[in-house]
Image (cartoon, rainbow, N blue to C red; front, top):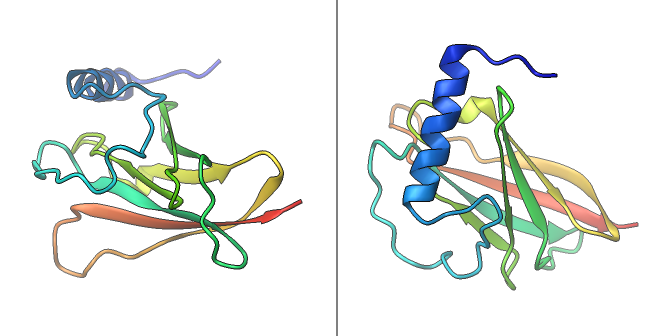
Length: 136
C-alpha cells in the first residue's frame, strides 16, 4: 500500500479535477488533439508531448504512453497514426522532474526514452519525449 502525504493527495485531487474539468479522462486518446491549438495557461503546468517510433524511425500507432507522477498518480494516453501523443498540463504544482514517461505496445519492447531538455533560463511550457521501441 502506498502512503500519501496530505500535500501529495491534495495535488493528485487537484490534477484529477483539472483533467475532468477539461473533459480529459485517464484513458484519453491523443489522436484528436495533437495538432489542435491549445492556449497555454500558467496554471496548467507544462504540456507533455512526443512520439513513439521503432528502431528504424517508423511511427508506432496506438502505443500506450504512461506518465507516472511521483506520489502514485498515473496518466495513460495512446499515440495517433503518426505515433504522436499530447497530454495537456498536469498542473503547475507538478514538476517535470516528478513525471516519468514510458511506452508500451504488444509485440514491442521499450529501448529508451529520451526527454528533450528545456531552453535554459525560460519557464518550461512543454516537455518533449522520444520513446524508441523494437519488435520482440
